[in-house]
Length: 307
Image (cartoon, rainbow, N blue to C red; front, side):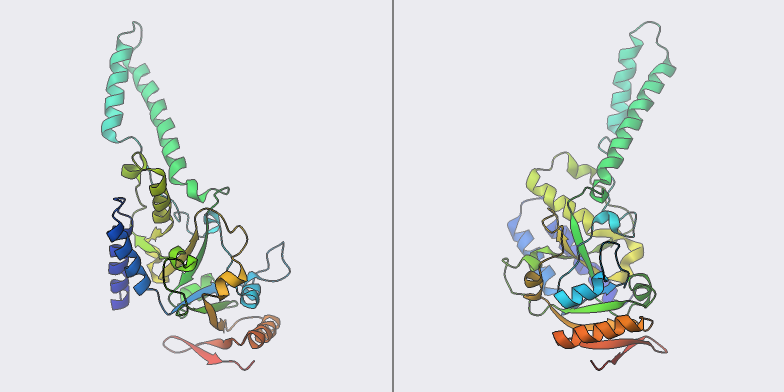
């Protein structure tokens, strides 16, 4: 792990500890927001493929550059089965044992009921509880969930992401300049932009779910959505969140372009020629710098492209 990765892991852990404390400590929450805002990279990137959805005439990628918006995805559309999921055991082993003991004592008072019947009845109860725990833990991934999110990253030179998210280097990577984001809590994009934390175990929300109130439930969903498996840490991801599903369609052009500027677009070296020509035209009209990916001996390199 690099020094950059270690530094990121530390401040993100500090942010999560303060922001998701569930103590109604306004000072801690404000300190967490300041920590997050001070670590927002000057540039954020989004890898996009050139696949054309069945209901559209062109890829989202070209439309996003032309119209300057971001397509918001459902959690169920993400590529990690543990993404936006949590474990939730509403009944601990102690509670289950107490329930079993009470059930056993009650049934033993009834003549003609043997111990196997007690055990079978209890196992049926346990299966019911387990199924409900699983449904709670994965509810954010449900197709009907109103939550929408957009994934961004701190790097444009990651080859696994060029391969996975830009369809084997045939897609593109969009660069957003974040230095023009307005200061203050009034900025919707500042409030909705968060780093992703990488952990080795799916978050367990058992201790929170029973005693949590409605305002804190919003924080709970945020925490779950912003947590991913440690295997994905190389992505150094940030997420733009819409918890309440207010953006079933992409964000409006004005809301995005007034805050983030598309400062450059990087074409995959295997992009089809017709897409290249269309992208050149869009970048010329939008005054966006365009570059071509080149695989160097040691790392990804980019050559400027005349539009």
